[in-house]
Image (cartoon, rainbow, N blue to C red; front, side, top):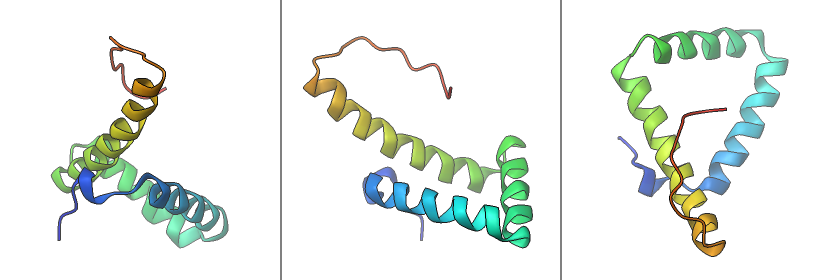
Length: 81
């Protein structure tokens, strides 16, 4: 079941991140799997890239709401900080 960015709620992502960070800090097996996942993503694994892009697109949609509220236009995406 492939989710798309329209299926992802930013609040859910924040909760997921917080839970994953805690588990990463507390669980060595999870930490190892997380690192393996990063390696797969950086190596161009199609499934990992699709999941990452879905997360990025969900974030972009939420950022755009803020930009629209602040009447910010013409931004150029340059990747992660």
